[in-house]
Length: 151
Image (tube, rainbow, N blue to C red; front, side):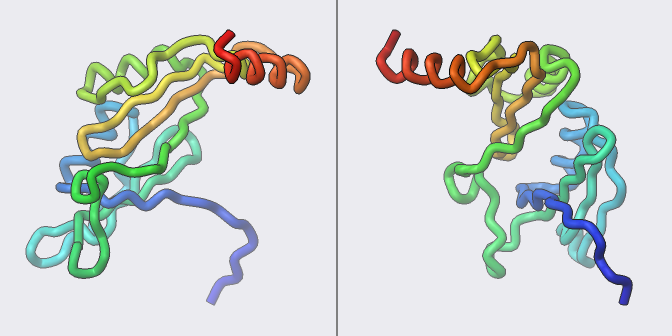
């Protein structure tokens, strides 16, 4: 067996209708579907997508009998998938045009990014950001204190 020399982290998303979700992520996020493997009944057990140059995302259909339940089946998810991109405005608009719902408007943020978030039709939360300026630790602390005090 080949030895693993690097560590990677790949989100594995459970979706209602993973085949449809893969096509949606192509449209909304510019993903490329690398492969889809289905059971004889058509349920997707594994799909691989690439977003950008390096980010991979895996998908599967819901398999509640094995603990695989999507955010739609759970009533939400506490997880946000973040995309750091060269042009947050373009990626954000593409996702919204494809059918995602804004959960935080895209705006310049105190931590130095242009940032916003949206929910896809499968219940997964995504955020996008583009660095727009350097923020010192002191400036960050002051901005967080001002935000916490309502100012």
